[in-house]
Image (cartoon, rainbow, N blue to C red; front, top):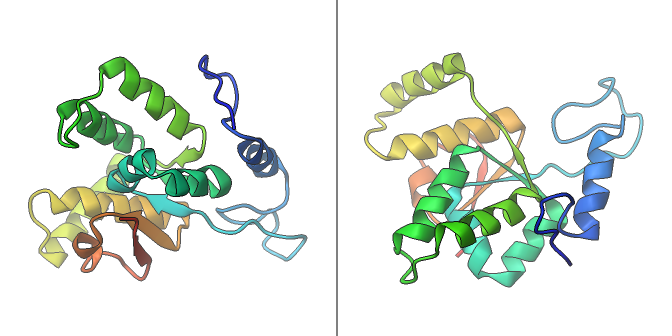
Length: 175
């Protein structure tokens, strides 16, 4: 696998093939071209929260899985990972330059899902109904984004945080 430091290309041949297949007219992770079975469908990707992305930077097997399968996340996860890498919580503090390089590398294997203000307010209403308080709201927003992406599984290090808000999705601890 190679990484184009200028950010002009995918990280691996698997990523190139995945990107080519995503632009093909046959189904994909969200929906399908015509609603009928007109060809093989891609397996649904998992949603990676920021803790799973940090773990992927430290665990070569997990990183290879992301490169091979791809995944979904929110762009906000990039700032959360940047904060973790540069804040020293890992016992090592990365430079901002190194953190950005690592994030650019990760981004080649990710697709980003964003929530509108209306979707965010609906999620915050759900937070009220579920009794979600404080920082758990970030996990709820990850879970909502995963639903919007059509993910069936959330990858995280904080699986206990997702138990009350997972909304029918599988939760997998990457640690």
